[in-house]
Every structure is written in structure tokens, then in C-alpha cells.
Image (cartoon, rainbow, N blue to C red; front, side):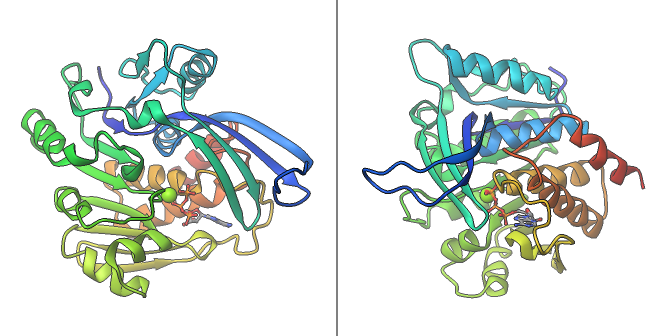
Length: 311
Ligand SMILES: Nc1ncnc2c1ncn2[C@@H]1O[C@H](COP(=O)(O)OP(=O)(O)OP(=O)(O)O)[C@@H](O)[C@H]1O
Ligand SMILES: [Mg+2]
């Protein structure tokens, strides 16, 4: 396989329901004006965006041999993803997230047992020849892999000497934020978190203090701050950027904004952009993603992002 980037993490279907007339309450029905069924999971969205930007990317995740699994397989191929490493498990249900999407945020219901069951010995990198980067998505979701990241990184480094690693923890559904994550982050190059995640993991109360603490373990700490933009420390230097669209003009749905940001960053990183250009492009990818339902939007939308890269 020729992929330059490999994603190891979550891939599931997303049912996004928006323009709702209120919040759910037991025994009541609320109405929505829109729904959208698409590729989901932080890993799935990241993989599809990066592939569509032009970096050949593969994903190792588990899906079922069912209706949703077949949908995901066909759909992710359409974005240019190399699907050969996706594990298809007979007799198990593909992961699903139902997301009630509001401008202020989202309420999600997920069934992700199959993804959570992926173990170290199910991950094989034997077929890859030219890998340059590995991205781990949704650390806290990967129940059966959590303890094995350090071993997995060592295994990959044995075959690909100069390879780099990034990690986005996303939320901890158990709200534990245990210290064992430090064992993993000591072994990676780029850490992506949002504002809540960086404060919880570092046990600090200000973003800058949190970045300062984590940057003792990772060279590149990037914090996504929703419509406020980002704050990052890259190779000992601080960078701060704002969103252009602070008023959320054309807002449709915030699903996957962080994964679009991450994919934009890795695009810049693998193309040797300077840190400020890398972050600016990542932020632009994040901002643009809120104008579409789901984490991806139409394949054509990437034309606009690619135009920006050319300038
Ligand atoms: N409401 C918004 N308006 C404009 N841009 C936004 C908005 N929300 C997010 N973004 C853009 O997307 C980026 C990442 O979003 P966010 O901070 O929500 O990350 P995240 O929490 O990791 O997202 P995710 O829900 O995908 O995990 C921001 O840095 C910004 O560029
Ligand atoms: Mg996130």
C-alpha cells in the first residue's frame, strides 16, 4: 500500500439531526427540519478530509458487514481513502452516533462497541511501504487499545524509522482523565486537544498554563478553541490565531470541525509548511467545515480549500 498517512481509531456512521425545535425530554416529541446521514467518527472524518486534500491516507478501524458498514465503505472510498485496512467483522454492528445539533453545541448518543473492541494484535502494518505519519483518534474511546499505544508506537517505529505521530484524545466519556495518558503523549510528536480537554488532562485552569505543562512532554501542542480559533506551542514557540468567521455566518453544523482542523494541520506538516502557515490552513479547514452538515460536506467543497493552498 502506498499510503503516506495511517489513521488508527474510530470510524462510524453519523446521523445528524438539526434545526430542532427544542431539547429532548422523556415522553415528548420534538421536530427537526433537517437530518443528514454521513461518515462519522473523529478518525473517519480526519481520514476522508486528508485524503481529499491530496495526501493518500488509510484507516484501521472496525466496521460490521451490515447496511451501515457497507454504506461507510462505499462512502469513504468516494473521498479517496484507501480502504484495504478497514477490518470488517461479521455478525457485529457498525458503530453509530445520533447527534442532535444546535448552534451552541450538540447532544450525542453513540453505540460504538465494535470500535471499542479493537486490540493491538488486530493492527497490522505489514502491507504499508511508504508511511510517513500515523494519527491516533479518540484515545478515550479505544477501550481495548488504550493500554497498548506505547507498544504500538514502538512496533511502527521499528519498520518506519523517521515516522511521526499525532494524537487527538477527544472527550473522555467516563470523565476520568487518568494520568496514564502521559505515557502515550511522551511518545508522540503532535497533540491536538480542545479547550476542555487540555484543561482536564493537565489539571490546570488556564489554557496557556496547560499548554506549558504538556509541552514538556510533546514538541507540538495544538489547542482548538471553537470559534475563538487556536492557541499552540510548536517547537518552543507560541502561536495564536483567530477565526475569520467569528459571527458563525452560514453556520449549519459543528460536527467534525476539530477533525477538519487536524487534517489541515497534518496536510501542512507533511508538506513542510512553516508552523504559522500550517496553523492558518488548519484553522481555515475547521472554519469552513461548519458551513456543511456532518464532518465532510460535499466532495466539491475541497476544491475551495485546495485553492487556498495554491496561494
Ligand atoms: N462555531 C464556529 N465558528 C467558526 N469556526 C469554528 C467554530 N467551531 C469550530 N470552529 C473551527 O474549528 C476548529 C476546531 O473546533 P473545536 O474547537 O470545536 O474542536 P473540537 O472540539 O476538537 O471539535 P470536534 O467536535 O470535531 O471534536 C476551531 O479551531 C475553528 O477553527
Ligand atoms: Mg475534537
